[in-house]
Image 1 (cartoon, one colour):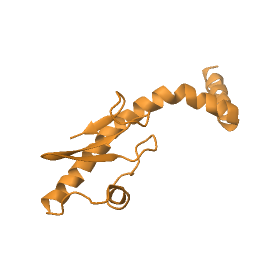
Image 2 (image 1 turned 30 degrees about the horizontal axis):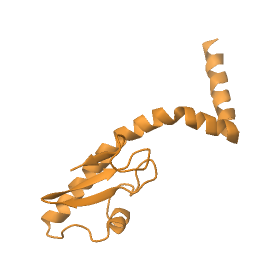
Image 3 (image 1 turned 60 degrees about the vertical axis):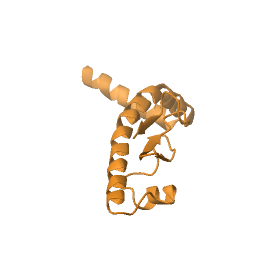
Amino acid sequence: MLKKLFTLAILALGVAVAVPSSRAALLEKARPLLDGFNAKIVPGRLEAMVTQLNARISRGEGFPRDWERWLDREFTSSPEDPWGNLYYFQQRRGGFLVGSMGPDGRKGTPDAVSYT
């Protein structure tokens, strides 16, 4: 009985994903779960970015002049956060900040994630 229910659930999910209107509704319902999962991925990517930038600075290369180009060509992960926005860079006095704008796509909001 449990096996039949599981099979039925998988079949229903498959149909929901195949039908565009159902797919949109399913994705909208899953968005909070996906955003939470993605928010756990971003800090690790930012930490890797900081490590690579620090290595670059220690070699005397300084900060990248073209941030988007550096992200695209030299950063070992995706240049975009899980929500499709480019990671950002801000040079600061005595250091720098890298970040993701989060699900809403705006800097400085509560869902944004940054690493100094």
